[in-house]
Length: 222
Ligand code: DX5
Ligand code: ZN
Image (tube, rainbow, N blue to C red):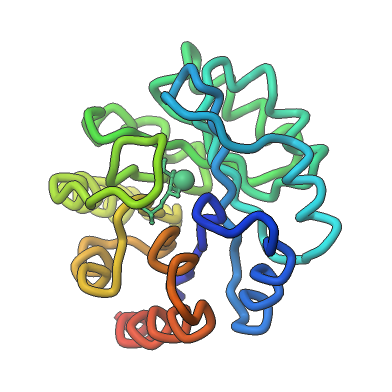
């Protein structure tokens, strides 16, 4: 099943609780939470208190995307705050295997993420150790950017690797996904789709989510 993971980076933080309730009513499975440190990326966003507050309000799966240096220092805190999936950046990890072990030791799901300039092949040998591969289709740091088309080629390479090795790893895409390019994204092999601005800047969030879900249904039986 293809799943939507709305990124709250573009949410109205004064209305975050209400907006999450809309997602719950629409039976969205995940909430994508972007954590930025102002070092790994040139922006600062949110941290443990937000994850903790959201955890208290919802049972939805919290898909936490760490865009931070030294992720090993903070993984245990994010696990305690209530993350369900912890994604770290390959580029921020001096020893990715060790970070994967650390995340797994918390009992949470583990995702590894690559930025647009990192070749897909760098993940060979690591994909079999994780639950999810997150392919960034924009340079991490900001919502509302345009999808970089070459990331779809990387998704195809990762998809083939997963099939060839009989794995059932999720492939998530993040950045610039809109109604007018989501079919192309799904055709490349993605099964978890992060959407930020297109959902939270929409006049009617519920309707926008329903439109995405209608398109997902076309792909569910492939
Ligand atoms: C960017 C973040 C994304 C972002 C996506 O660094 O990781 O999750 O919120 O937003 P859109 O869908 O607007 O590109
Ligand atoms: Zn993200």
